Length: 107
Length: 120
Image (tube, rainbow over the protein chains, first blue to last red):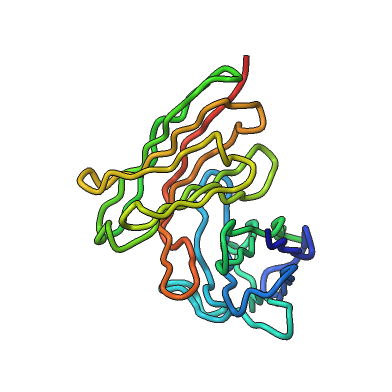
């Protein structure tokens, strides 16, 4: 199974800040990396697929990138609605493993 | 619009069995994989199982292999998760999601989840 190592596990930031979350797979996944946002009691929401593609309807302040074997989710100019838990997931091979999650909290 | 709705979650005793259902609408059901993902209390998301549009191909997480069976009824536009030999570690919110596999695979539409509690 491919292991996904996500960091940091938690993050405190202020409205208007720029934040980055990193995900590293234990084996090759090409660019088959997805990012999700999850709020308590709600369905998870797909933000980014294929490492860099913004899902329809997702604000442009969210972006994804890849460099070497690391994948990054960047949120520019944090908004109140962005405080949530974020997960990466590889969509390369089953089992489609998730990272451990990053909880983004208001500073 | 695309909608996914889970049902069937309840309290069940350790060693028991349970079947979850997932009803989908708003898209050509046979064109898409479907999958189940769960979240145990205080834990992250865990992918559980997937099934192809035709129902001929399935895959499972190691933690449920041999105990859970995913199936679908295309005429009813429904996906099922038959769970047996349930343990306390299977307590979780179970989400059903459409899996878009045009190249890589991503879960683009999710239900609100159904709670499964395994306890004596």
